[in-house]
Image (tube, rainbow, N blue to C red):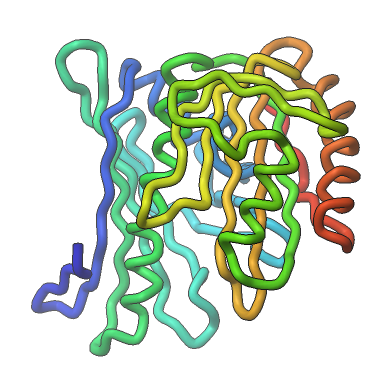
Length: 280
């Protein structure tokens, strides 16, 4: 949908998803560092003397850290924060999260991004957030459906290569052995790839084919999210794994170096690792 503009100059987008869980369970997933790290990116909070977050720090990758100042806190219904993620010359961005209970043991999660501007200079960034959240909300839904509240350890690896994007994507998924699988099918890595198996929860759509979401059985119960996207003059390939259970941290310590070495062999260079997130 286009960016919504009101008479005050506020420009905004919003995205929502229905997920399983009580408001308290969903709140833990979207409003605490361990919860957010279990399905999104490694996140921590700085809390005041009463344990209320005052800052949220999220690590999207090397050079892509976000710091947001909490401006409202009303558990388990809503919270808001403000950041300068668009840069020093851009207006601050306000982000609001809402949790609304529904019948049948589900909740609607809604996120709203907004800023004040008298031009459309920042609309593409707002639209980018709007189009990006549905991918991550699928991870949130999987997490709350299968792994809610479990200890989580995760890692993310990123590599860059030359265009085109579809060719880079084929190199990634062909190398793992996932090239021909469809949504709902069981998959298992082949060749010299580190061992991984599970069920494909989503394969990319015609509008964006270079994405895959797998609910893992090995190396541990978890979620793998793979995608390729154009970034400047290069293609970014991302491999993120969230692993759950009491042994998840040990499995991540073993698997992350193996995947980093494998990814580096497919895309020569030194794949970047995002600081691993671990929750209890």
